[in-house]
Length: 139
Image (cartoon, rainbow, N blue to C red; front, side, top):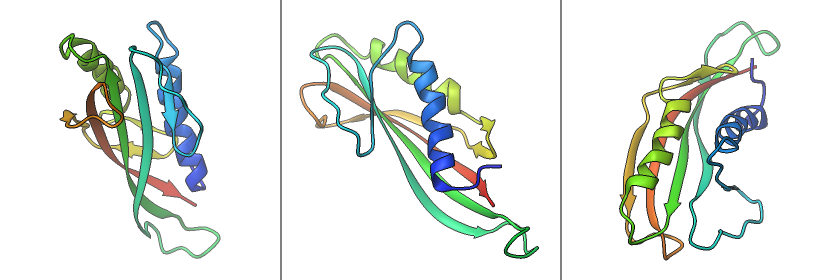
């Protein structure tokens, strides 16, 4: 069972890092980590928004666990002026790793997107955003 916010974050980031290390590989920007976007080539930005935390069991402070909700947000950046194909292909790889996935006491709902973000931040890229809500069980 995942026991801390960092355990949940590490499990999610590890899953996407493993996928994006496969060919073709893409660099990833994570929260609060220095990152310089590559010049005119694809990259991803990943962050996690934690939401509500509720009792999942009422067994006691040392034997129970909580249900923590959250949202995985993945921004995908590809060069502008060449169409959405490369962007959507990367989005499909991310979706396949998280859409209704279950791992490390984390259960994902169906992923949403990719939705185009206008204007892209940072520019100049074609940017889409994929999101997936989840429940994690913390002891």
